[in-house]
Image (cartoon, rainbow, N blue to C red):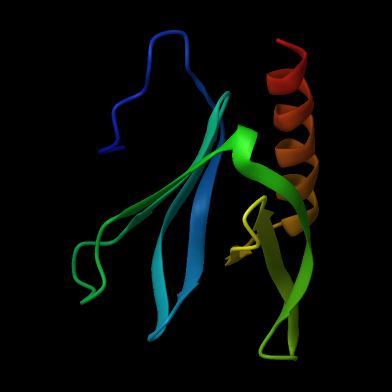
Amino acid sequence: MKTELAARESIVLQGVAVMMRKIGFVRGVLYLTTSRLIFESHKFYVQTGSTVIDLSSIQGARTRWHMFLLPSGIAVELEDGTIHKFDVFPRSDWLTAIDDARSRYHAA
C-alpha cells in the first residue's frame, strides 16, 4: 500500500478492484480502513494514482451491475452527490464491511 495510514488507522478489508473513471476503467487494489476507502491503481495505467474517500463523506453504498451484465459492482455515493463505481468480489462482503466501518466510525 502506497497511501500512508494515519495513527490508529488499520486496514479492515482489501482486494483487487476495478474503478470506473471518466475515460474507461482502471484496475488496482481497493482498501477499506477504519476511516477511509482507498483505491490505488496499478502503475501501468494512463490514469494512475489514488482515490481516497473519508468514511465520514460516504452517504451510502449499494449494488450495481457492471455494463448491465455482471452483478459485481458497488456504487459509493458521497454526501456531495459524487458516485464512485467499483467492481469487487464478493461485493456483498464489501457492502457489509463498508456499512460496518461507517457505523463504527460514526460511533467513535
